[in-house]
Image (tube, rainbow, N blue to C red; front, side, top):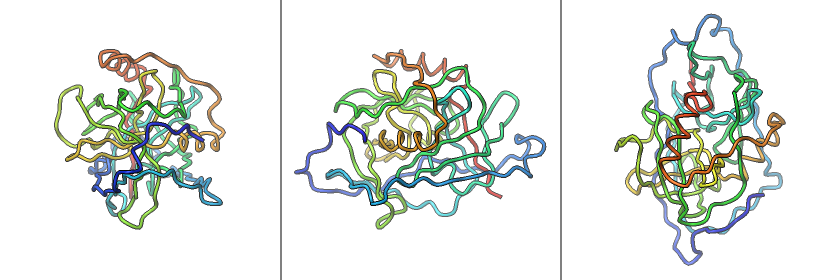
Length: 282
């Protein structure tokens, strides 16, 4: 169970704001998949710890994430959480994919084993490529106003998005009446490199707190309000525990300022700890 602190006030009236899923849709490129991919079978399991249904925290602010329709070829972000080949990404990136792969120097590496959460927008990728080191996860909720660093590939461009933590919130996936899940809300600040377009493609990337721990997975954004929504850290750890695929604590680097976050991102890119992930729909 994640530690609850710094949520939005109960006195605030609930409000609904349309959100944009962070996936970027594109025409699939068969050339990058390599030989034998057409015969690869992707095994997808579902994990739902809500039996009986896990109670939701008493939070006033809510968001609605519009239903994007049937899954299409898409690109997102994934990151290593165990050196033996375990990765995290967003559930809406892996959902209903026929083939899934991580970008590498030699093209796209096959992924065959995915465990998707039924309570949050997060998926565990098992049996992926091994990594030189792994990122550390935390269940701690940040202090309100503290800095956060969202990393990934919006529009395919490696980027760091700086933000400040606002509080815990709800999101309904698929529009009103859809599944409700707890999330963390962040106020977007600066983007490095500078850009003003949609954050498509950053889905599934890590959000770091100032202690250098992964406190969330990038899930959605609200361009007009400048909000970034990330998965609840407790839900991430429940899925990771259920996967039985993470056997180490991961590495931590202090991120006291944006310069240190950018420097860390460059290391993670260079070592292949954060990569683009591709979903192919036949």
